[in-house]
Every structure is written in structure tokens, then in C-alpha cells.
Image: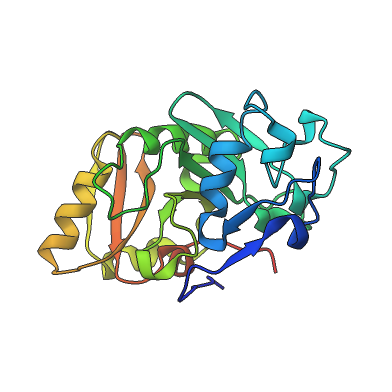
Length: 227
């Protein structure tokens, strides 16, 4: 399910993804694709946008790009964060939701001290536009179980058995979305977890649950794929 790359393989995306604008061939590490997208593809005002973005927005008029897997669908954007459709939605029924919220600055993941609490409220607000509050799962995978080295919060739907499994993992409850990283770090430290994933879900109109896992919370708790 989750591709794990042992090395940062470099390849020509212009060949692999079929993009070659004005003679440019972009060389990007596989593990840096999301960093490239959030820095070069979410804002069409970026200089030389069509030649410097391997997955342009459909509304950017970059040579008639129309395929789902070769384009970026931006759900929300501000100065700090952007949310996009995950490629796993391509070819899926309309009711399947899988998005990604990312910082626009370089932040590697859950382990990066530069991570900001604000991404959780941003991601939650974007998810609310597409999912019912009680079904929302916001997830960050552990460093060893992710394919990308840019922080990305998965916007997903909880699977039917998720809530019954929360108690099996370190967890705590919060009322605000400005203390998720802090809470997760405390829970992981108390259990001696050197690396961990984080899940956020709502338990009531005034309360959320923060769950930490040694493995992928995306796999454990969510409907991550329509296959």
C-alpha cells in the first residue's frame, strides 16, 4: 500500500510523467515530488510555471493537460499551506476522498522541529468541505512508512472499525487544534516511540482524539484507497 523507498532515486519526470515544456526536462528525486508540487505547482503565478511544474493545475493552461494523474487539483491555498487531491483519487468513484495538506515551506515530516500546529486546523477546515465531521481522519505517517520527504497530512475517511481500535494505542483528548504535535510528541515519548504516526479525529462537537502509532495510521484506521 505505502511505497517505501530505500534510496532517493532520481529520475526524469519529463519522461515518466510525459511533461516536456519548452525543451525542459525536470530531474527530481521521487521522494521530493510533493515538495516540488507544493513549491512549483500549486500557484500558477510562479515564474515559468508551465515549464517548471511536472503536474500543473488544470486551470493553468499548460498545453492542454487534462489527465487526473498528470495534473494538480488545488483544494485550498494560503501563504503557509496548500491542500490538493491525492493521486489515489484518480479513477475512483465520486464519493471517495483522499487529499493532502502540506506546508509551503520545507518541512520533512512528523520528526521535523519546523512543523507548525496551524496545519491541523487548515487541514480540518479543508476536510470539512468534503466529509462529515465524525468521519474525518487526519493522518501523518511515520518517517519509515512514507514515500515523500515533505510533510503531508492525509485527509481521509475513517474506516468502519477505526474507533473501536483507538484504545489499543496511546491517545489523548484535546479541545483545540493548536496542540496536536505537542500532544502526539508527549504520547510518543511516554511510550518510548522513537518514530511514530499521528491520527486526529473528532469524538464530540467540543473534543478531538489524538492517537499515535508505531506503524502507519493511514493503514490502521482509514479508507485510504478505493481499490
